Length: 395
Image (tube, rainbow, N blue to C red; front, side):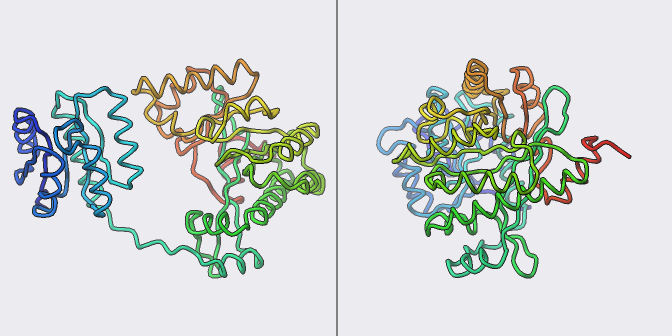
């Protein structure tokens, strides 16, 4: 059995002794201590701990500064944040640590209890028992350009089901990359290259056309559902987008009511007139508009007022943990309430547990998408999934 080494960074001697005893009960007997972040950094260098249990409010170097220095040094140990501070401060500290790309096992408010600590230690054990993933190779610009020209773009589809009856109502199209040898490459390996080199328009065009062709194939097989495709705001500055969308929909015989453009926004629009005209003209054609990742964009509320959206997609960040987290639940509730007041349909993204499903159902969310329903899958697999789940009439 692997010996786990721990480091407690806390200025409270009583808490340090209590935590040490708890760790011993969990089988961790190699424990170093430090009274503030500065001592903690020295201990990290000497002891090489697997897990650091860190307080936030300490004299000298506090916990937040300590985390920043850990990140600067490329520390790969797991972090548990422990503090008597307000719960929101703890959550913000966690977000900050994760933004530093530190491995945060969790956060615990004082007084520390054994069960939550055990759950985090167990989570660390599960992490270390998994085989390490091979390093991910980012595709080169030359590879991406060649792939766009040689049909390497593939599209997977994630089901969206009605909360009321679990009926398949639609899918979201998600881009994938398939090498010549058939190997799938995840979006993280090529999307940044696409976005940073002015290729997002070409990529979006291909994904949309492939999605409409797939929808036409499904129609011939008896599956009539909505298909949603992502468009970044940056892509909606070309007036040709209107013609692309309208022609692809018409050429494939798709009812415009079964097409949704999911609008994502990574930064505030510099030119609002072009996207506003394009989206409004598409809405006049009967095409639906969804504001994607609501609450996480640069100016979601402002765009919600400007653009004639028909659907509001609630980001996973507001669903994750909401059944047990009062603040996350409040944000989720307010998003649903806002959508209802504006007459918008609601989609909860990233639902992964029964508890999350039960909560969004109780709040009156219309549609759910996430691993609790199904993972993204190729077009043929989606057709099979639809048949198995009664979305296509037999005979």
